[in-house]
Length: 427
Image (spheres, helix red, strand yellow):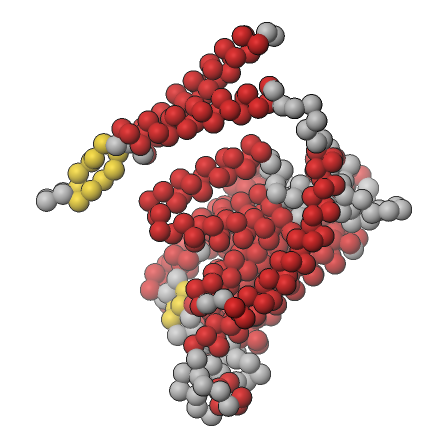
């Protein structure tokens, strides 16, 4: 193909992309509702649509041009995987040191943001067991998050149990619901499994919304007890039995915030440690075999039923832990906190980070959740920026931020495996 015909084809492709963008953005961006004297008024914004269409046209044309004229010395995917593995040896320890020392020099806002990011990191690592290792597409992971939160809230208020007593119980109850979800979907994979898990998440939310006698319905549950430090409470009056009284310091709200930060940090590290250990066990290798080829997995004599159920149960258990922490941190929960968008966000973190990559999930959560909060001032365009970033990410790094991984079991030296090989069943 000559350069002239290639350029014409690129222009035609970019024009068609801009035409599609015009159809999508014409109503979503081109019309804005404003409050008028008596009713809502539609205000046209043709300049906004023109900018969006021009950006799509220019971006598509630039992408096609780069693909056609890519330099011959561009590193191969295998070399990029090796370079990423070397960088990961330094990135992971630096992130760990940064997370440990954050409360020493950060203010209240940044610690709260760190708690939010670590919560999603823990959820992402829990969902990695189901999606990244076992290859089971779960769109209803927020259901286990909700079960853990409501389990802790109800047990604490009705039986007077503390956070540390209810935490394993919340994880156990969430794991039981994971088994309940796992049994009906043993024969399902792919899109069908995604639809069933999505329905399961919505069923749990609707039950929480309508079972008013147990969950208080849309009003939610308030006054959820806070966690204690070896029986010491974090109170502002500094009375007997409080942390301030025991250590002889002035009571401060930041003490409880810092304590909550280290609680979720420890729970996230526990999730990471357990998932890494399980991955090296026969159970973890069975999960990865199931992800690559279920038929071959059965032919090897692996019990597919047990493998699927354990993936759902263990992943749900960590979701229950995160839900219990969410309840004690907020001191208030309602069904509105457990919508489908939560599941979609956690799944996007897992996919963008790289399936089966612990470091990738942490980086994706830091970018997605932290970046979203930083763009809070641009609330009107925040989701647009977020969606555009996802599109760019899928174009440039379709297999995630960290697409390679260290094999669970290797003969001889342990080398990084490219995502290309994993997708072909050689991982």
